[in-house]
Amino acid sequence: MSKYKSLIMDWEEKVHSIPQYIETIKSSEHIDEVKTFVFNALNLKYDIDKSHAIDIIEQDWQEVWYEYNFSMGEVE
Image 1 (cartoon, rainbow, N blue to C red):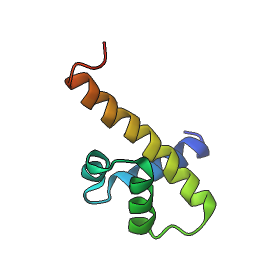
Image 2 (cartoon, rainbow, N blue to C red):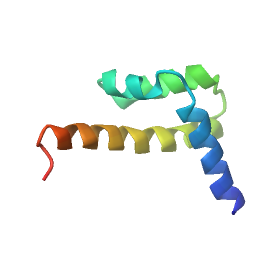
Image 3 (tube, helix red, strand yellow):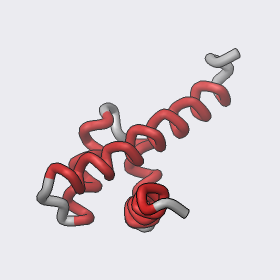
Image 4 (cartoon, helix red, strand yellow):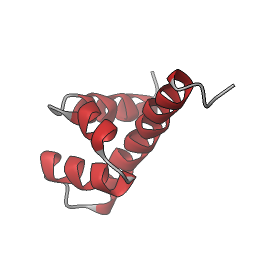
């Protein structure tokens, strides 16, 4: 496995291990609320760490809201 892939998988594990992470996505009106939640939960201070977390958050945000819209019949 490449170092980059390992790094991404480590970040996915960190973010996904935060209690109430998915629930926070579902209850947030804007993705910035989730970013703030994750940054605080993981005590992220450096931009490089935040950028890795943002990649995961954006992917999860899209998946959660796609599933919601699909279940509501808004996606064909």
